Amino acid sequence: MEETAEDWRAISKRGIEKDRQNNKKYTTMKTDKIKVHFTDNDLIAPTNPIEVNLIGAGGIGSKVLTALVEMNYSLNELGHAGLTVRLWDDDMVTDANLGRQRFAECEVGLYKSVALINRSNRWAGTNWKAETVKFERDSLDRLPEHAQAGIYISCVDSVKARFEIAEILKGLNNNRAYRNQAKYWMDFGNSQSTGQVLLSTIGSIRQPQSEKYEAVANLPFVTDEYGELLKQSEENDNTPSCSLAEALDKQDLYINPSLAQMGCSLLWSLFRNGMTENKGFFHNLANFTTQPIKVA
Image (cartoon, rainbow, N blue to C red; front, side, top):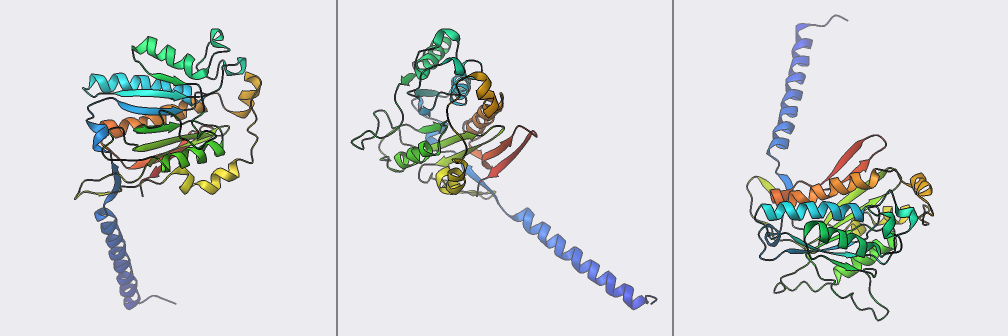
């Protein structure tokens, strides 16, 4: 059937209405405030170095420590008080750790935390500390000594350890009068060629008023937001590797350093920019893609 002028007017009217609706959606999108998290003021201009508990000195943890050395030096150069790091791990260096982790042959048999901290202190002139125990409650359900810190970074290889860390952090006494109040927890995790990093707040962080942004005070724990996924992932084989060749079958050679660099870049942005739109990311080294996790 041939279309009349009225038909075209009707089509045109519908088209204009559709454009109007699209423009309305676009305008709404444009006027929506971007959700961000503003860094706690105590991290921006501290009087003393910020205490960091780095939990795990293996494939990711050993490389995160190197990034923290660089970050501390850079912060100092910018007039910031910098960081003081305490590295927790009860594991010892074995032959299987050489190559993929930051250890030399002469360090086999030493505690991982001691070997790494001694090397970092010699290189950077710092006085960082090593703990040769796990970051966990003891048999009397007491918190580990020196458990209090401003930032916690977990680089552990078991879901059980993540949930134990979460329980400890939830139970910390965050007294406002205490200068070293727990503020943030950053968790690193990976499989063979994929991984993720998630930044959480320990409680709520006071946020400034902003006309441009919607400030988000609380970033949930990885165990709260992705608890079921973590438990499902535990079905995979997490038995220790007895050789480097076996370890490389389980994990890509560069998944750990790529996660460490990107995760520490997120932490650096908290100091340098004073805010972040992203609270983490999913990373796939097999196809070279990274998906940010937005603050929500």
